[in-house]
Image 1: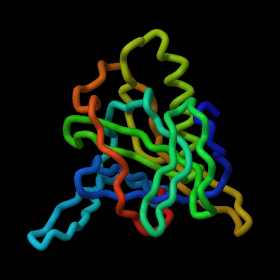
Image 2: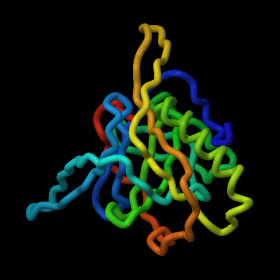
Image 3: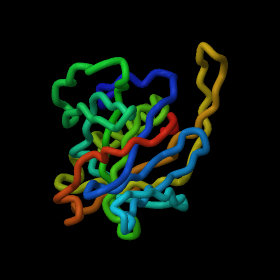
Image 4: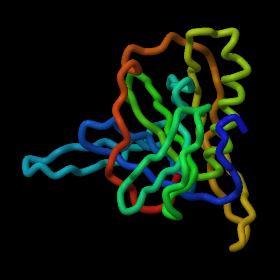
Length: 199
């Protein structure tokens, strides 16, 4: 459990997009959709969002060196209390926060995106991906993993309310590349919350 996050068997999560912040990529653990949240500002200054499905398979560079872990709340607005992986876990601010992660992704079509989640099913598969990253990183010093997302795979979770089915990312490290220049300067978390526990 390299991320240092409890990754038990419940769902949960959320995220957002907007303003001058890094655009969002989202994983919907109910449908198995990988989504790009695109934000635009109208002439009256208000922001609107549009979720566009990212067709899989797709490849992206994952900034595994700088994963952030800690506590995330999506209600009433998104708030991150996180630290770079390996740092001391911040204290839990309140019961509105769940353990989660924040990870930057990049490919030429999508640009720089930020994926965050508090869903334990998604945390679990990211933990496994990070274990593979650690195992291979010594032989690929100075590079970042090129991750292939093939789609979603079904997982069944026993909960107090019965057995539930989710879809988690089916991804793997397919190669190693130099850090893209676009990853040298990233934005912060988006302050606009999604509705619902879909990650």
